[in-house]
Length: 129
Image 1 (cartoon, rainbow, N blue to C red):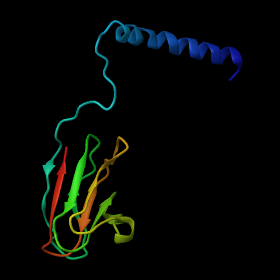
Image 2 (image 1 turned 30 degrees about the horizontal axis):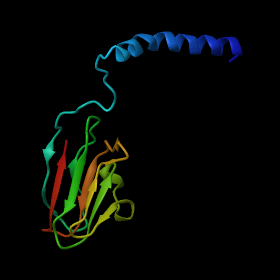
Image 3 (image 1 turned 90 degrees about the horizontal axis):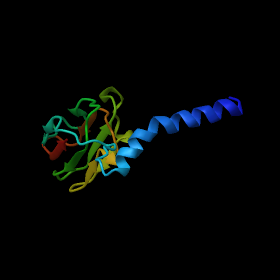
Image 4 (image 1 turned 120 degrees about the vertical axis):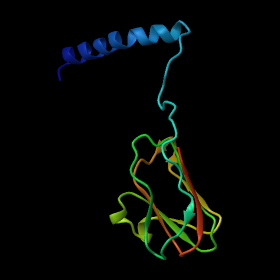
């Protein structure tokens, strides 16, 4: 890209943004990302169905706003973010009894499938929005 094209591109972007900047300066509300999101599947709290076998909590969800999974059992659990066919304990988040993990970190939310495994009969809390 030569210098004249670059200057034209910057000028065009300034023109495109000018109306939004004028509205913001005039005290009008400005919507920024992330936008508010509605609940998308809610509570999946349950028990581990089969020892060392990953079970799906939620399918991949592009509009997931957040989620929390907490180990309420007495044994270690593992939470995997991604396709369940790829789930292994070595690539999962390990949760000791009482520990939890969230789907969001530094304002970035995992929209992947979420799965869990542990010891049969142990309970867990799982909530997404």
